[in-house]
Length: 309
Image (cartoon, rainbow, N blue to C red; front, side):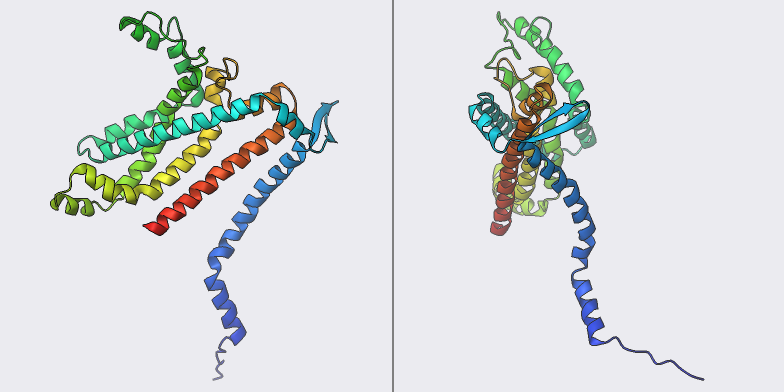
């Protein structure tokens, strides 16, 4: 009976198999990277092209006309952009800091609850489940000078002249920050809670046995371990805060004046209301560039924290 000899793979085949085994993770990610690159690079390229052009609809067709760097001259004389950038940075800083602190505090407190923990988690998640348009409409009614529940409570407490929350230039942006904190604190709470519950609590127990109090345990043991989680949560919230639109659009419209104007709302006004699509594209690119700087800074901070742990 004839037998077929099994041939061993040659050196070239073994090397190819070893190469594929070692680099399989990269080859597996390649289709996704190509797909994401197409979806990202093409729109960015079109946006860059539009920022160097003027575009308008003529008889139902979009007509492009190259203008070079003329939009940068317009930008240098635009008095709204500095106010919009300043308000955006103030809004991002205030909302992210307050929401990060509250989210971490609530996560620590809820993680220590032994009974009905599911109830507290459900309650804190409710604001995140409500559509932003409904939240803005609800708070607009609450901020109403004559009939809003907030001013009614202040009047009952003896305040004769309650504030004009969204109509006062000094309070308009702060009023939007309050709404944003109410809405998005639960988002950071959810991420922080996952981080807190993944901590090695036996380290805390050992520290308590050695005489450390709760503040010392969280400050010197748990907080350093939570830094990567905190950085990622703040980075995600910073990106979302930079893109705030619906709340300001419905509550203040960017007013009074430019006291609550943010860059995303101004891009909308330039692009769709004023019809200056080329200039609006330039403002959108500048916004994306600023956001990229923040993302790179967060990534560097995260890498630095991981190296020093």
